[in-house]
Image 1 (cartoon, rainbow over the protein chains, first blue to last red):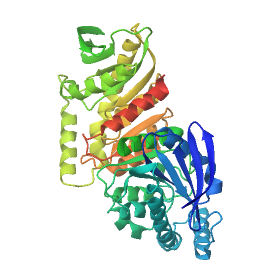
Image 2 (cartoon, one colour):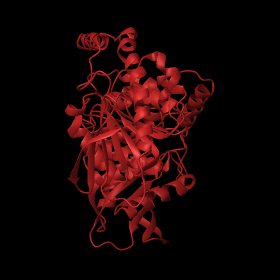
Image 3 (cartoon, helix red, strand yellow):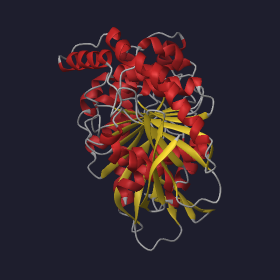
Image 4 (cartoon, rainbow over the protein chains, first blue to last red):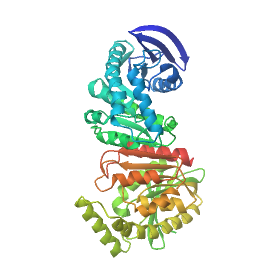
Length: 243
Length: 243
């Protein structure tokens, strides 16, 4: 992990860009902390640059609550090499949604499974590097992003002890068996009127999660319209579980 | 409205029992308030005596947040005259649930519609009397209880400006047309693993509500196991909308 830039954002937030091999990432920490802080991994749909305004907003909230926050670019997004098969599957998905047809699970598998396969080990490697920093300690939370990545990650990664998942993208039904293996406390956000998602699939996934404590917060406002109070509820969930 | 008892509960909460004609009720107010307070109507499934420990807990929270809280007995519950047709319908409902059969809408209509017809005018009359007290002013919220009563009440009663509804009892599908007429901000609680409720019916009802701001909070813990943090989220919803 190599730090390549450092900047003070104000309000006591230090932002550092880094690379982990070929993968770009960003770390936000309190400028001054008397002890190592817990960490929130900040998920996103891919494209650090495009997503930056939202990511930094979420990171500022996390730091204000006493957490460090970190994210890395997804495979095939931002400046990372594109995957032709993923782009084709994504085009097929959007064609099916635009035609208001049921989305074939085969398309979802083609889009999501290779992404999960590649991304999850990268997030785990990032976690290794982040937890090796003296200013960061556990416990670790995972928040948002591609819900299939979050699902796999919290099953295979025992260092993550609570997760806020955003049910805003398709999950292949073949992954429901993994969802049943999730046992950590979950806080799932669903945009009820998400124009690019399958609500029933999201509800079935929530039902499948094996966690004894799982909460679903469904709101209006479309895919990108998560209300501010819903974000604050996610912060309170982490405050309950990571402190 | 006649006050029949008065008692200080500690923590600055004054509890007064009252009758409104033949209907018993309870009012909780701050012992000392510099101005008239907003009001939360505290719904319940019937049986003020049996429900008292929970009701007073919710009322204490409301008063701590600067609200008055009030409730009245439901028709056919507590010491009020029983309805033979309602008791028969209730027995039919529980027989169907115990047999794990789909519950016929005819049973739900027989159970719920007469209750709604009787209860809603009583809550409105209670609201008239409560708002005539010098220590209470608007805005008014409605919280919990039989969701069919809450649905009808917030459609016909323009003085209620926000509601926390508990999707923990059956609503006849014939009432979905009324649900579409609800326009105030709604916060709906659902126990995902409620053993005595129909989850799909509850989700369909949430979908039907016409409100631009509506939120569903689904949690685990069975019918009576609403987690403490879910109650607190309801309080924050009222704080956002009634202050």
